[in-house]
Length: 508
Image (cartoon, rainbow, N blue to C red; front, top):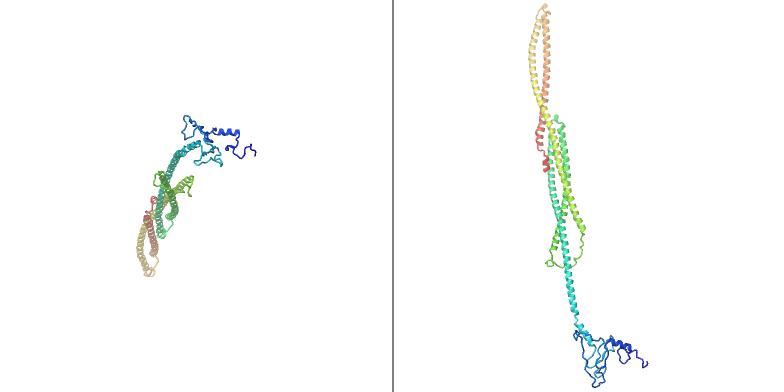
């Protein structure tokens, strides 16, 4: 390397031995204070040490421990040189100040590392309240965030309370509807149970007309043979028994339907009561939640509750379920109400049919009784006439017999006369004279008359026998009719007087 050329390995900004280009010297002087000749630099020359010029600080300058406008960022040039008896050191404070080989010279008293300007800057840095400002800013921000957070929480809480109030209002509305439906289905179940009791009572009451009809039929079998006829009364009684059987069949079918409907009503009542109970529990819980505040004594930590439970449903499904529950219960109640109408129709119509048939049967019995009474009256009149005729015929027979006895006397007289004349007259005197012809004619007339009277007696006896037989027939018929009247008028009418009315059927 030539002696006149600078060493490229030497630092052109720090080492004073190396030659510094003119351009770099200008940049260096612009970066720091201009160098002045240090009077304290060695070698020492007596009389050259003069007091330093006073530092002039502009008005309004900050305190001396804070950075001044006259401070340099490149360091101060000390009065002593870098080497000498004092060796105070000389350092240019540049961005390379921390590099090895550019440290200040250390003597036995101190080490100079920082400039006064850097010391003041350090003071300013230390005195600058960064943490305090951060604390104040953090405090203000935290207070603002807390206010915002509490306002947000308060708004959320108010919104939640409003939603809870709306939910409570909805629950109260649905709960009122469900409670009304519970009362309606309960009343309907009780009413249907009363109607069921009526129907059972009607079935029990139906046994009476059936027993009455069967007893009347059985009683009429005790009539005597001439009156064992299938008259209108008998036909109406048979119809009455058939109608009673049909009414019982309808009653039993309706009762079976009522039993099924009672099960439906109870199931619907249980379902709607469960719904009402759930709504009451939910309403109680929501009211309790609405009344809770952060100062409440019942609040606790419950980790993991901020999630949807497994059995949670949607609001649309909840509304659908509530409406469907009410609709199903209303349908069951309507079915029960319609069945009650059918039940009462069956009871009322059945009772009316029974009444109509009973009236027809009673009318037929009344006609039969009237006809039997009329027949009995005619039979009694005929019996009276028969008895009178029998008496008359008997008197006639007695008269005929008396007449025959008289004729017998006349016959004996004529026969005696003829015998005397035929066998007592002598000889020629026994002739056929007119007297003889008259006696013969008389005897013939008497015999003919006696024969005729005997025929008349026989005829009268025959008539008397016929009258006696007819009397027996009349008496038998009268007894038969009396028996029929006793059965129809006395027994059947008394039994049928207990025939239940439609009102009794309806009342159960």
